[in-house]
Image (cartoon, rainbow over all chains, first blue to last red; front, top):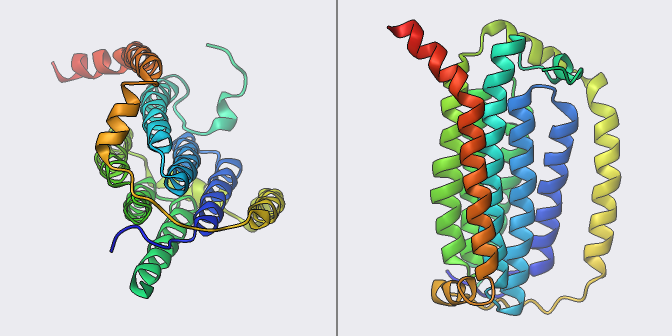
Length: 104
Length: 173
């Protein structure tokens, strides 16, 4: 085990597939918790592409960007889940179609 | 050599399958379990890509912290069977075809672009020491900006959540 001749273009295709699955989930679901999960999947696939590119060139920059994506995902999830609790309190539902009027 | 490749494709298949299952479940708790499996499989991929530090962070922060946050919120909301029925109704095929078509076009374009690159795939392992030196060398401004972002996220989450906490505390007293 260990790094060897792992084909980089297949990793990039995998990252593209994961991104597309996340986008599909984001468009399909109307429950805000599942939409946040789909966003996580998309961010994670972008991070996979960065790490693969960093490994291809043997530079640490890919993993540095991975850590920045991790920080962004953590901040996004904490605020997003706060919004989920707020939405549940005010609208008594988690359906995004109930929250399209942008009134507080 | 071939074992490495076999394990690589196996974990890639696990990641794809569990992600697809996660986003098509009606029950949020089941979806979270599938998502955690997917994140663990991607951590294995990071090991194969020669990024052990990224793999450890993927497990500790993504699967360990962010997903636990999701689990806490799903437990706090205590979703009823009615909402699960509603989710199942939303997963009908009539809802599927337009997002499926659009994302299939996007995937075809992505694969077309990615197969055009010439591949001489030699992967070099990048150890945590190099990552740390780079992180606190040329990218130190980014680290400061990330800390500001996390502080803003903390304050924002507290502001959005403190009504909920106060109401629940009032109920228990």
